[in-house]
Image (cartoon, rainbow, N blue to C red; front, top):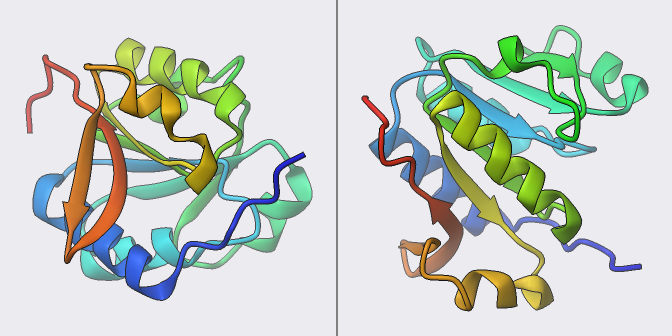
Length: 153
């Protein structure tokens, strides 16, 4: 079992900047887990944009009540599509590599870009695929972007 490394302060700043510079509609983080700082910073930076987070664990979602970012229980393997409808970006930080295909399917179904910040030693599938674009901001690897060709901003 791999242990995910926390997203550093500098990395999350670069992620927030990338999102702010490229998206202006609904933004969804999948698998928020115990770290809400990126979604909260996106919301703070983009106060008129709908930002929400999802996780499969009810206790995690309950802990975020009143945070200013909407938190919803959902499972990317059987997603409630209405939760994601209208999103311009779906992103996931340090997801288990096994969920990336489900994230791809979800993003395609709703017409959103997908940004994945994988665990450092699980990047081979991104390097070995021409459909993923590596995103660098402030000299830091923000993650890998799977653009939706039919996105309208």
